[in-house]
Length: 293
Image 1 (cartoon, one colour):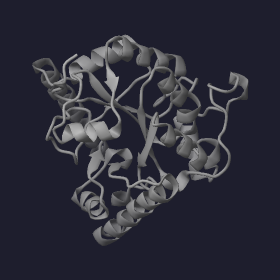
Image 2 (cartoon, rainbow, N blue to C red; image 1 turned 180 degrees about the vertical axis):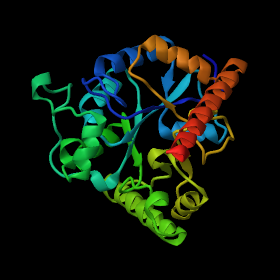
Image 3 (cartoon, rainbow, N blue to C red; image 1 turned 30 degrees about the horizontal axis):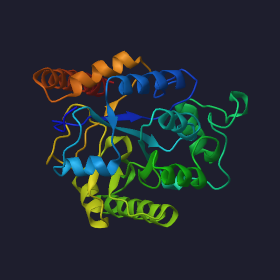
Image 4 (cartoon, rainbow, N blue to C red; image 1 turned 120 degrees about the vertical axis):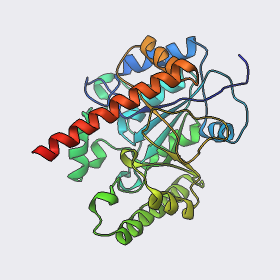
């Protein structure tokens, strides 16, 4: 394997648990995906290696960054032990205002399936968070500290409350004030509880504008992760617009095929343009329906 990656795909997960549901990859499927990546010669980068790559450092041709959004407990219960088993690393973007206190809970590495915490689908998880029952579905600081110290699952910022202030603020000034507060709280807690300066921010729902970006820059964030899948993370590319691929509850073969089209080749560029066109067409139709309603 040569050190000449033309681009590095970033994979995006939310949940890893046994229930078949949107935004979830079941543990046996996740394991097959990791096995497929390893068997095909892929290497998972740490977030520092990925940042160095964006700044021009070489990495193996078959490199990926594996990320998880929000900070769900099942990432600790199921995903963390599997990453460790396959010698891979992940990055977890946590909503710091949701994180609880208490002792670490059981995982598949140290408990029987019957003794593991209950699993919840995404909509149930959102409802529990909104009703203040975050500890049922969200990680604790002790669990985040364990994972971060291990180097297997690195912890970084996903704001403090996951609020889209562009939607709820009454003015641009309030939006800027609130997102600045969010980012300061998030970065401060990660510094306090995990003892590190955080340069990496993942935007809630992938949304950002110039006000969001400037607030992040002012606080010291340097690398901004989006939910836009149709582009390439290249050396000396845009560190404030990092593309990510949403991973489905599908086979390892599917993932390898998706990564083939995520590479910076003619096929990959044509695939990205076609998928982006389809997405824009769907959104235009949706806006037209809403206008008629």
